[in-house]
Length: 86
Image (cartoon, rainbow, N blue to C red; front, side, top):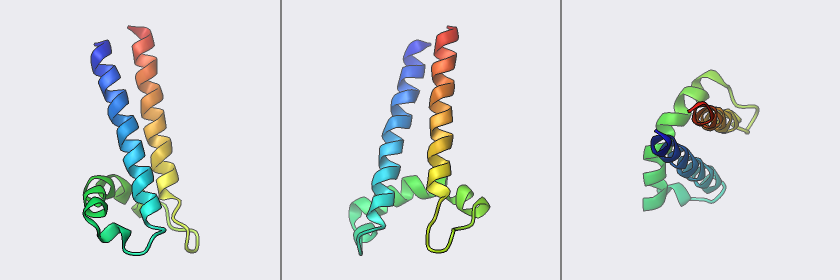
């Protein structure tokens, strides 16, 4: 069971880095039009979309990725808690 929890924590970590890279790509013109940008969009947008529907942007700033990171962080901490119980 510890191996499954460890694997899930690693997947959350990798996904968090993918989100960071995807969000940083928005600062560079045409970066999301590259192969890597399209790939990251396919794996990140389905996760970010529900947050964008709930949380409106503040002017030109989209704060939904911050909430998305918080949810991933809570999930990771929850896995640590479960691992501590086992």
